[in-house]
Amino acid sequence: MSGHPHLQHRRFSHIRLFVLCLGAAAFVGCERAPYSSPTALRDTNDYFKAISPPLPRPLDLQALDQISLIFDGETIAATVPYDWNSRGDGDGFQHAVDHLSLGQWLSGDGASIGPIAYAASVPAKSRDEAVVLEYFAPDGKPLGVTALSELGLKKLDWVEYDKFSKRGIGEAFPKLRIVLGSTKQPPGFFRPVGLFDASTKRPLVSSWGMSSWEYAQIRTNAPGDLTTRVRACHGTPLELVLDVELGGKLVVETNLTPDMRVAMPGGEVRFLGLWGGALYSRGISHGRAPKDSETIRFVLRGAGQGTGALALFVTEPRGLAVHIDLLNGNGAVLGSGADGFCGVRDVRARSRAEDVRAVRLTVFTNHHHAVYTLPPIPNLLPENRAVGNLFDVKIPFVRVGDDYEFRQVIQEATLMEFSYVDWQNGLPKNLLPMVRTNVTAGQLLMEYRRNLTNTCAVVVDEKKNEIRIEPTQAEKIKRWLRQKLRF
Image (cartoon, rainbow, N blue to C red):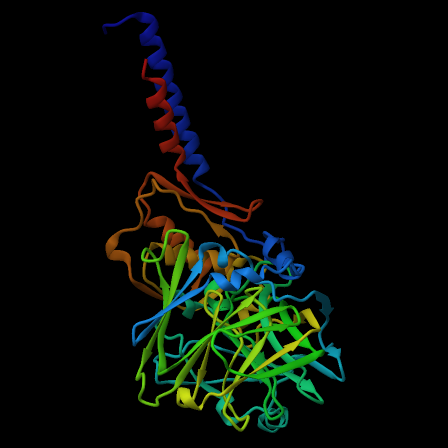
């Protein structure tokens, strides 16, 4: 054997170390089953942000003058400053935070509001299949047809078609409907702020779910309801955070005039314009606006054909809690709205544009962040109602379309963050898409691990509540040796 004896000795030492490390790596591979606690606290930032509403900030009424419009006969282009959407969603009012245990209602101005019923459905097998909803009272008792009728629910509320069908991993999780009622007169409006696991404080509704929740009203002839996918399959108490406008009602009614501005408690409203036609789509157009702004485009259909009307408003602050009714000359309501898109409020009318003559602006100045403690999701699989390890949670059905969705369904079912690294080669292309039934989160993780390349390992970190993809011990040693042998 040639070479300097000292260098040879170093090489043999590294090789012996390499063999020993490989043996250790093989031993490390015999790890115990993964574990995720159903009660350990997760990242609580979102929870405490939800129950700590921002204080009202100073108004910048000049911001309302920085919005411009162009209409080409079909598309309305509203250009707003880039910082418009970063200014926050404050509604202009200070909020009281009320923690309400099961059975308690939020009360004020002679009215009360609180949950009166719950229902959860599993995904339908097709878009045309009706899903029967079984309702429960807040104390967990089933509600029959008579009780539901007395609460104000109609037959249409008892069954539904699964509109979430064929939408990827959303099908893996139950769809929860929460029905809210009021005593005496409707107290105003409510809007969901968040839904959380009461034990871990982890949010159970993703951003896409929240975006579809708008201000809702409990009316004299019907309760209000919220429906969303809940990213959990196990029996855990819930905490629902609602922004509730309860009392202090103030109404301003005025004729619509071009570019008018109306001062309201909490802020100001600017009328941008009224157009004939039905709203077909809306979205942000990037790249065409001036450098320091962005453009929101509203596309109309049937302009000038009496098929509807669209009115646009903006407010300062952007999230001002004002409710807008479009009126005809006799004061009848032609259309209503509260929320908007990227700060621009769009209110649609069921009439011709020339029939819209006035606007009614309503605010409720008493605002609350009501934190309701709710019972666990009803109608879960029996084995999921009391789970000691979230990797044992059973998922009735899941359709996985890509690598990201595979990690996401494991992450949501176990309430663990699943981190991803760029060097990982991903799963075999012929594995996805795939469908699995009656599978546990642990089995999905094993399948994910089996299909990684032999240079990758999946590490479940119980202390950090995290799942990581890392190089295997053998791969780490190989990389270390390659470094050391470069001399």
